[in-house]
Amino acid sequence: MEKQTIIVTGANGQLGRELQVLAAAYPHTFVFADRSQLPVDDPQKIESLFAEHAPTWCINCAAYTAVDKAESEKEAAFKINGDGPGYLAAACRRHGARLIHISTDYVFDGTSATPLKETDPTAPINVYGASKLAGEQKAIENNPDATLIIRTAWVYSEFGANFVKTMIRLMKERPAINVVEDQIGSPTYAADLAAAILHIIDSPRFVPGIYHYSNEGRISWYEFALAIRHTIGSSCAVSPIPTSQYPTPAKRPHYSLLDKSLIRDTYQLVIPEWENSLAVCMSRLG
Image 1 (cartoon, rainbow, N blue to C red):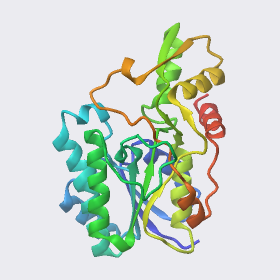
Image 2 (image 1 turned 30 degrees about the vertical axis):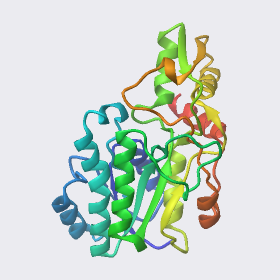
Image 3 (image 1 turned 135 degrees about the horizontal axis):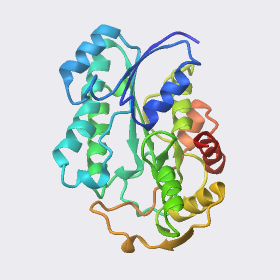
Image 4 (image 1 turned 180 degrees about the horizontal axis):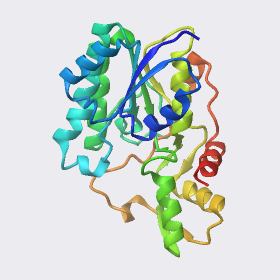
């Protein structure tokens, strides 16, 4: 395993934190930078960090992730999610580094009935999705031969705010909750995605382009909530509701199931089933 220097942006997010957990098992030099150390919408700060550390890789975990807030903060979302990846890709090109950029299922409109492939047409239905699509396009435009994009969905971990931790809290606080049942996909345990990224970095060959990654399986948010309830042994009543009964400022795609065959075949990845990964996360949460 050749030693690499890897800059990780958005180091305090769910994926950044999981990469920090795994880093100790690798011989690489990791430079973990949070928003205060490296705002990805500041090309000068990017340039000075790259000049200082001479990275061989940059993993961009930085993102504006407040999906509903993005509807009223479009400019901020597009600066971080749109311009940021473009600046990072340009810096990678100048310094001879490769970029792994994390994107989202929200670049699709959610009307598919079959697992989404990388080549399927994009058509975001909210500002967050549109800003992430802009970031994909700018990153590829600025460094097509050394940019790898991973679209993921329904990310959770023991760190930060996410669906799993919210459900655990609500099930302890309330006798009954409602959960949307007509949005379909597969969750992504951030620890699994972090391991997949490091596997790609250590792979004998690098194939740039767009890939999809989430855990294996197909469920609704409601089914996910039931699995969480079962794991913690809660008596909270969980009722299924349609999206129409849970209005939010940003529209959500109804169908987010990603086809993972390309990343699996290209990088010989073993992708865990969502139930197994949920069990691992729950045991870590105690």
